[in-house]
Length: 176
Figure 1 (tube, rainbow, N blue to C red):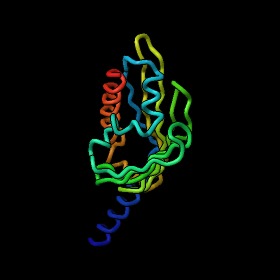
Figure 2 (figure 1 turned 30 degrees about the vertical axis):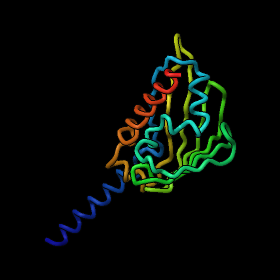
Figure 3 (figure 1 turned 30 degrees about the horizontal axis):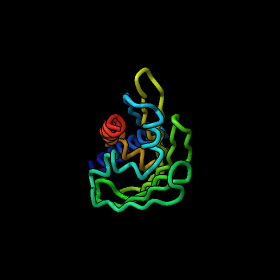
Figure 4 (figure 1 turned 60 degrees about the vertical axis):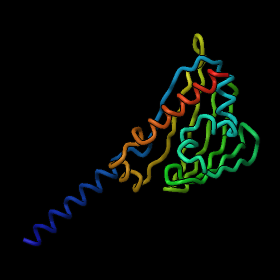
């Protein structure tokens, strides 16, 4: 009886390991919103980390969050380091590509609550009467991340944050 139980448990563990290994190696979450403002106005908000506290959803989750700005004032080489409560964690963001009124690409290095390196991309497309802003994050999933993603959906985990941030960004640029 014990041998059957152990054999069944071994089969379950093997099946779980196979299921985890077969998960995609990459993830991507994206949201977009229309803003009644020129692409240049939206670009300026995203391209300068000093503007982020006005619209970032995480800045509102921890008003006491410690923030440090390094490198360039804006654009490529600008660095934003943060350390806050468990809702915002700790890490850094570095602008690695900046094309005026077109896109801002950011390297995200998370330290807490988990270590990860991902990439965020803001893209701006002029449309009649305003700008379509897309905000995405993508990254590589190692075996442990694949296992964690069986229990948590990244789209549901941060998609709402992106929607909130885009709405707050829209309010900032449309008020100006």
